[in-house]
Length: 194
Image 1 (spheres, rainbow, N blue to C red):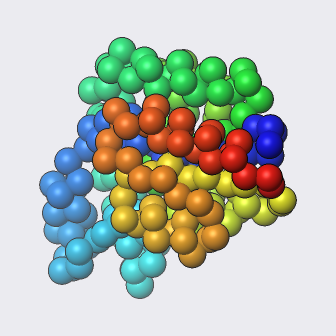
Image 2 (tube, rainbow, N blue to C red):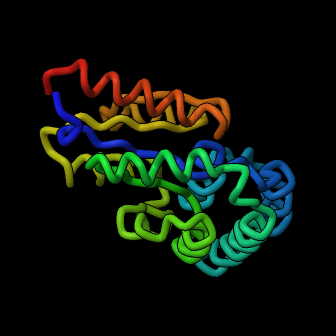
């Protein structure tokens, strides 16, 4: 099978780039703001689904977006140069790539600019479109009927969403494993007569 029938979906934080956000500290700040005792895991989906006023949700998103912006400042693109080159190379080979993230579109655009990957802005799904990973995956699936979708992510929540959406999943423990995960995905695409 050629790679034209294969669609790669990549999570951003923890998969494409290192996790530069202290999510435990961030969750604690959001809990204090909302005055709740909730695990907030996964953070974005929890906030989206909690029965809160839009005003409170917006304040929580502001705190999260601030942490997202700080994480971009802290990121050295050279630490992920191999991942950047990998993605650009796949695109050059005609592999369709989508990025999914619980970041806001605003912070994702800034991040992609810093990484030199602005070309992927239009094939990225942020929390502004769908604040649920499963919905993000189902949306991409609806755009790519009759294609093999392989999602690479770093959390059990990613894995569960992929299973619910009927998408093949490959787990990485961190961004350093992206290359080998992509290699597995490409091998899988080539081995299946899809």
